[in-house]
Length: 166
Image (tube, rainbow, N blue to C red; front, top):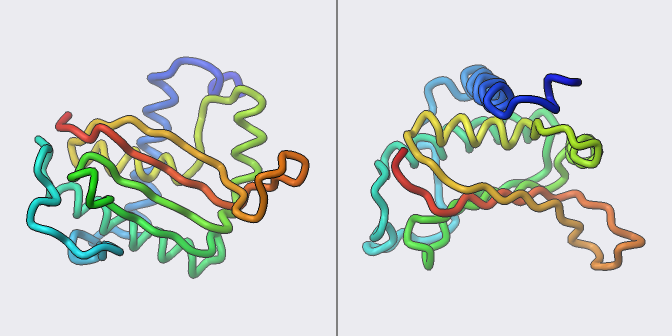
């Protein structure tokens, strides 16, 4: 457990290796043909970006196939991967409902353990492989209430912003 509270570069290396291993197990040949946006693509959707759009879409295809495998195994209930149109390719969001390891991840974060869960490991490794740097905000949500007394998060929302070439 001291390892997970220590050096950020060691933790990052662990997460990238973990994410790469998961993707290679569940989606070794997936690519952009496997990603389907919940939005209609517009011509000006990707205006202000310097990264390779096809590399991003390949990564999102691998993510989708991996999450399909997780869903069929009961690890999560529903998910959505989106590139919001009004952010012109600078934001990607991943929403996961009924995520099995969410409570454990919250507990670890309360213990100041720096290692995030498998969803973050997978997505970070995919963005890294695509040559994309970004900021990540993680939100744990309870869609049934806003009351802190009854708060029981079941949804994970990952928001990747400021996407740019590495």
